[in-house]
Length: 599
Image (cartoon, rainbow, N blue to C red; front, side, top):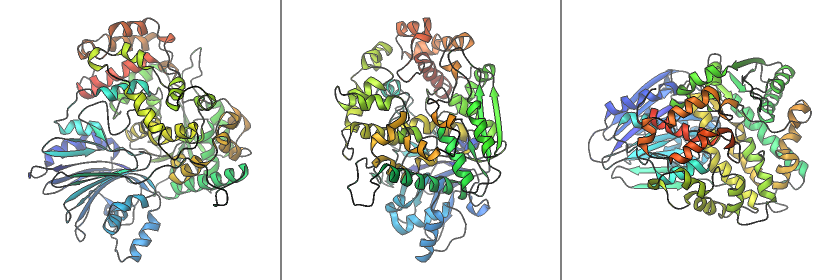
């Protein structure tokens, strides 16, 4: 797990290593163990390393293979690298290191663009092929690892976060109106390739991008998710029990791989919910010893509890983990909020971003790798809006998603933004196109596929990556193992949505976890103070939205802002987010990341 950056000049000039040096600064938290740079004519690479696999200096990056004429920077973990290494040795390749990084170098040389489909894991990487004079960028199937880029007539730059690109300079920081519509409609999700900034784009999950030295670009998708029912007699399950057994086998293998492929200890972020608790149970069954688990809690409000310790504690006790509990007062949440916003590569509305940030700080003092339960709800239908969509018989698939998921309808969006950012219903059109794509039998199949391949990338996967990597902590997400997701996508939706969702996981957990954990209502990483906004949190948001910077930026209509400030508890989204927090967070992010304000 690392931070990467680079530049390819298109104007014949050599790479600007001074700019690479500036870009490396914001990547330091992602890779505190080693830093390096490399240049070859028009190409410059920078890398910050978090040492997880092959801790020796032989695995430092940028990794250069002079004999093959290749250089690589890589962020992530490849869980099938031992198998690929053996295959490549059989083809005659020799290795000078023992980790997964060099396997990518050899795989590119052996298989070219086809190498990406062979990789099992989470990754974002760049290969410079000096013989072909091309730069090759690739991102994993679910976008677990980020990859941003920017360009002008002279060069293309890429990095693991927007902060690195902004540090390099020359980025158009004007607001993308389509992305703004996405942001306020899809709970801060801006589907690739857009970001909120016109000058910053991101490579889509499951895609690669090749850039030749003359500037020609080729982009391809290397994987897609099939959400249709398999035909009988083709080897797929045909009974409920067979589906549970298949999902159990693939989940167990995903958890085991993410335990074994590390040369440092691996812990678990234990929230108290079904998903992370099941990870603890499966790890214990797989023989994990002296397992560290970590839970965080916050202050209660009259409406909501601020912790789930009553559920996480029994799981930790049952499996005798080395359990660490942290309780964070609201005063610390507000004081540390600017740091969490500074760690966001893009604005994030999820109230648990600061929770993950503060938890990761504590966890990183004891351990460098954790497994986390993100993805289970999206893959197995665990959120309350899925059965509502499945039961809705009115209108098109996009209209059903709009009714039960969108944060704001288009009419309300027009009430929110000023005329400069008004326009057509960009998000509605995008969602309609995506839900109409083939290889989905039912509406809920298409919705779950959109969620797991697109929406989840920005919320919560990006949030977990940004907040953990801010402290040099690698988070692995076994529920987003692509072989597990492929099985779940073809599983009948009625099976997944049974018993208020995630029925296959509940069936696996029965007997392994306390019934109270399995049968409890769906919980969320609680941060009540950012959901029920009052007191000093309301004062904080009011100051942001009343600031000169906010007024001069001219994104928001003042009457809409005043309406939310007057009664913040009366304005929540369909999925229970604070609309006031959305406005304040975007403006605060822009002030700190783009304007350079540190107030």
